Length: 488
Image 1 (spheres, rainbow, N blue to C red):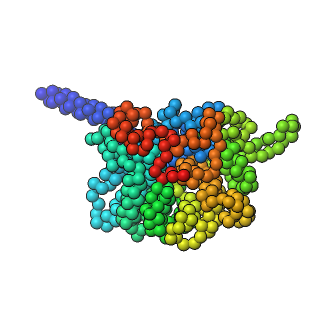
Image 2: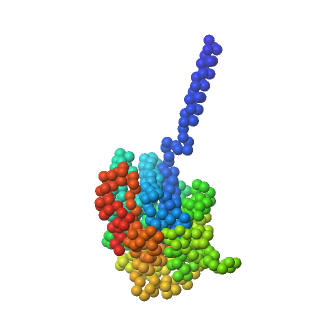
Image 3: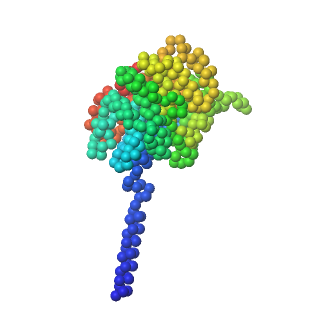
């Protein structure tokens, strides 16, 4: 009898052990069922920065749209082909599913997490910061498409979300920024090291929120001047005050956490991009010393055995030789080059514009313009800002030409200073209609240059009714349909 009991004990023990092993085997340790809200926030930050700073032609082509770079062999995107690679679909996927979904879940989990009373201010800060990043991500979508799924987005119970009016989306984003700022307490902590942009510095996030408010307000200034004016005036005293406030994603030197520019330009082993003649010609004309920080020189000599180094851009939208065109500089291609999200230089250009629009902000348009250019020089570690600003073709009173408007002056210099930030440059070109871009090979009229992206093909088939309504509302789902703020 004792032997029977012993056998049963061994069998039961073995069965339990085996069951535990199978349970352990069937547990996906790399994708846990419950993820901390802080981890989801960190992932959303990285995914957002990866998207914003990307240059993969399947994901983000705004450096081409801004004519900073052009292509060598495959020139579809430089010729404004947005369809072949389903670029709009990939933008949707990246932002809605990889960024906004994680931010929503992060906020949900952190909201539901009970904390002791002393940690309530920390929890409140975390939720407010998530809200600011969420606003930033939505602003990317509405800048590109106009009307977008917003109030009904990311609802698993509603697979046919309506498209909200773009103007209404911008207005709500500004309201959400104010609410988030009101909830931030700089005397308390937040995410700490889980925050890849500011390391949990709440005071930095307050400046970021006010600066983002200025960016969104200036974007819609030609479509809703009253709202833009009140928003800028409310934020100007609390926005970025130096390059030290820049919002940057700190990348590492090894995969998978290196800058996506390095992934696209170096790790891929491909030679798809060169400097575009649009920006090279402009910087050569101005003898802009930042050109060496942006691009490399190339031998332009036609005499064998001699070398004549110069900056030479590839012809935008045409086939180009990689070896005979200037390349993207080594500084930009390093694996730990920061992901640039929002900068002091950018904000100073917006404030120069605000002053010209008659908004009540301190200083002069010229002082903001000078500060913006100087900050750009400092960011790139380039000397000579004062000398550059003294040139008649750069100095604010005489820049561009004797009859130049403030739109042309700010448009040109902000375009140069925003180098690598394709969407910001593309937005400014759409708003200010400067600089003058070059026509690629297969574009015959300047008016054919896209001023928005068309909606994903999937939306046309899977969300057909709402897509049709949105298409009608924006004036036609065409690349030539202007957003409500693009008035000129």
